[in-house]
Image 1: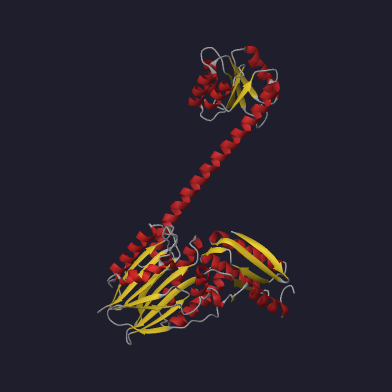
Image 2: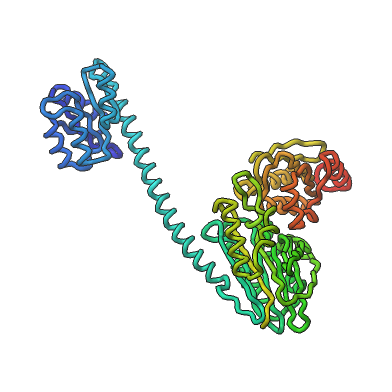
Length: 382
Length: 121
């Protein structure tokens, strides 16, 4: 047998035909065995499980070609089978192919040429199918591994985000829903040096790199916020660190950074290219617009800072753009409904967040294409 | 998304058709990098046929502008629909990349810039 050529079993009740085919295929480099009937063929198959192709007559006494195909499949589901017949009716060909044959050949005066071509073609197709199946199996395995990694990354990311925010004088509620297992949204709040810090951020894209950058940013802001309490100085310092890190990747983040000074009761808000922040005060809804560009574009960028006195009962509602850009079946965005949704809810943070998320889910039928983070902060009695 | 390319004197007009999102953002950046290699550094991004842009697409525009500015050129946008304009406005990306009222205005801005130096022209 030539290297790379397989073992072929030829089955025909006419020994002359079987021998002729064996000689032709042997001359072409294949290792050929012959069998006179179906039962003998099955014995040969059992003895030589590496048989790579079966060439069988259709009409044989005892077990015909179709029955042999079925029995061979029990032994080796994949081996290709070429059926030979002296009958040139198309119905026989269809029967053979439907029965699982890979090809169908007429035993006529051209058989010496057609058998070689058919064997090559069938084996080539079979190899391609096997290779394709292997690739699909590899892909499925890699996908399973990737999914496992994503689930793990999701857990890690959830553990990075604060679970319970305990800040005297504030009641908070959050909702975080990445569009995939991992996302680029983040939020945080903590107290340091008489200032309460609140932030929400959204990294561009929803890829693994967004998730990595989210983890970096969350740590960086928390670290800077331990000693710096001026949103402008803090965000400027963070931006100067981010710009060389992001280079020409095109990645950026939008962010709202707020500090509340306990002594003065003043809220200072910086919005780096982020969606409006809403302040709900009784019946009134005040929005704070973006005060400068997104982060990561230019190390020399600067921002304005908005100041507001925060009084008891004031509720701040922060969110990422996944909320307002979610679409319904008509292609409308949720943005147009946000103010009315907020106005219809009570100003308890938990109810506000649950109510907005519920209204959004109803609106878009639960189809979330972007990460969504909701963050509500109520100023209450300490 | 496909990007149609035209050249008007020393300004290249790129017309993206479809959506500029994560899967297509790299294509825009690569197109601009190729133009810079050929010393075309003044690019008008005609967004009339751009149906949707997300944050990755916006990032690609910013990156393209940086690449062009690094070669003394620049990017000018025109023809954007309101939803496309909105993402530039909120993120303040429109402070980085100028928007022209018309294609003709955009060409004029870039050709003036080209006349003063940088790239072909």
